[in-house]
Length: 506
Image 1 (cartoon, rainbow, N blue to C red):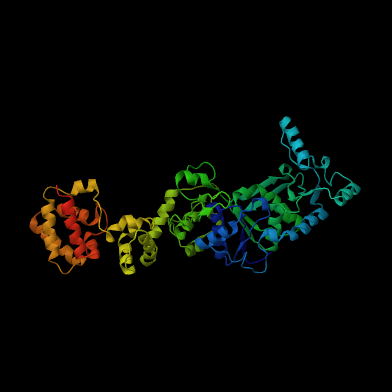
Image 2: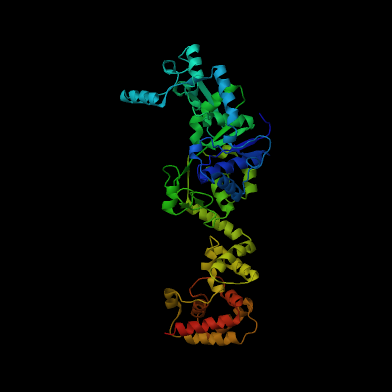
């Protein structure tokens, strides 16, 4: 076993990568980086019937988008490859045969129909059929037949599987970094199939062999693999290999808290459960992705980190580097983590505010182009700087700041009714005359002039500022009014006031 920390993320290319899988990858990545180790991607594609075209590329793109790329894997060979199980299948047979030679596994010739009949007979008696120590010597396998009969069956090409021989009357004492000490009575375990009749290994054998050959030191995976821990531990022991340390992560639960989070939950409640958009190659169905929905990878990673882990402090916003420094598997919870779509938006809003306005301006420029608006990058950046704190997504910047680019085409009726009174037209015309005489249209100067004029008039600030906001923005929203006037300029400011006076003349 390597003294250097080596972890692996081993998804099956059967469709898009669920955010539960992304979190598993993230925790593996954080653990590896904290300990100066390697993060390996292995594609577990032994089940060719479930293989989906494009799924492997999707997995790689997802990890890269999240900023947690693998160090080693398909296309990044580091001497432990190949990294697709389908390309390693010639390795597994010899290991299955080693277990037969040591008496830890055996050939089983029972057909699917025969096993089904056994199950039905047990069900009729109110029992559950388990293929293990209590009945294996009565079934069709190499334990119950003579050497001559076994040789004849093997030579005649009879179909068989290779099963692991689970020990009888043993109490296994196992350790899990997250769950602590675990005890398993081997009498309740079934003799799992390790090698299938089609010449392919099952997950259990391939997984153990690959982890050993790739010198994996820590197996960090979802809790759905917890029932397999006993078998995997016994396989390591049977081979005489040192087992890695295990950590089983809690499930990500539905927002309501009952049951595992699924795509259906996302569809029903309007949030993605995949990192990137996915188009099913067979049905053509498109599933939403966090990237296409406008989320930043930092927000998604920060949200996922807290789904089942906490740093033990009040801090909630972490960069990837900060997460790496504080992450500990011992602080991962045992219980399921409830997914909260609103919390994800909360993280997104934080990173929206923190994001460099120039970077946001580049993204917002594309939105403006779709609206048929052309503007200078410097101007767009200044606008973004003024309005980003009110936005959650880049798309929101248009709703928050359209008035910086186009004159309002209508006025929000409730806001207009609240702001525009009988004497408002006269006040707005006087204000327009005042502004018309100004050559300095900088916000601070305008504020000084308008405030002094309002004071001289002896009217309330709201009687002037509310209708002015309606005129410039079209609604009672937006940042500092004087800054808006400075940005859109003198001519546009006066035009908008005149338009409002004509449109809202009561």
